[in-house]
Length: 280
Image 1 (cartoon, one colour):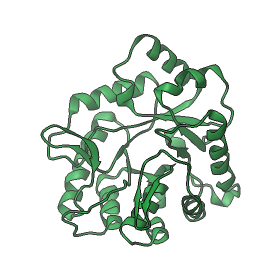
Image 2 (tube, rainbow, N blue to C red):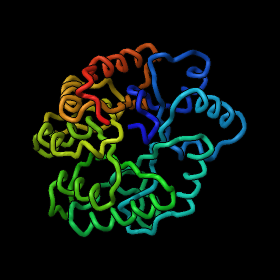
Image 3 (tube, rainbow, N blue to C red):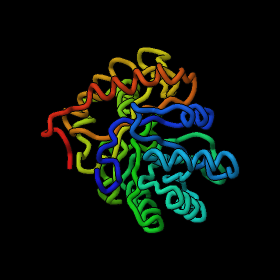
C-alpha cells in the first residue's frame, strides 16, 4: 500500500462537514485516516477551507467521489476531473475512489444506479476509467456497489467487476457491506464473491451498516451500526486478502465520537497482526 501513502494507516472514518469542528478540537488517536467526498468540499472557501486544510496537514486523507458517473451514456465531465486533480494536489491526497455505477443521463439522477453487467459495458467503463487516470496521473480506485436490480445482465456481478478492473488496470475499493447486502438481495454466496476478487488490486476497504427491510431485502443506508454478519465477512476478507486499510462509513444517525471509536476499535481487533497476513 505504500504507493498510496497508507502503508501504516489501517483504520479510517468518513468525515462529514458537521463533524469538522469536533474532530479539529479533540485529538483522534484511534483514527489513522479520513475520507471525504470532494463534491462536498470543492465549493467552499473561507473558514471551511481553512479548517479542512488544518486537518489534511494533520491526517492522511482519501477522496471518495459521488458524481463522476463512470457508467453514464453522457460524456465524462473532464473539467470536473481537472478540478479533482487540483484538489488532490492542493491537499496532498494520494487516493481518489469512485463508485462502479452511474448517476447521470441527460442530467443528474441523484442516485447511484447499476451499470448493466455486459462485456460491452465493461469495455466502455474501463475506457472512461483510463481517461480519468490519464488526467489525474494516478490510479483510480473503483468501489463494488450495492444495487437492487440488474438490467441487461449477461455477466455475473463478480465477472463484470473483475473485467473492469483488468481492462482499466485500476484499483479496487472493497466494500464488505455492499457484498453482504447484494448477496442477500440477489441470493449469491458472499464469501465466494469476496474470495473471487483480485487481492493485488485492493487499495482499501469500506464497512458500514444497513437497514433490513425484509429477510430478502437489505438497504445500504450507512445509517446504522455494522451488523454481525458484515463483521464476520470483514474478518474473512482479512484472512483471505491480508491486511488492507479499512474505513467506517456513517452518513446519518451519526452517534458521538465515543461510539464511533468503538466500531473503529472493532475493525482494528479484526485486523491480522501476523506479518504473513500483511500485503506488500
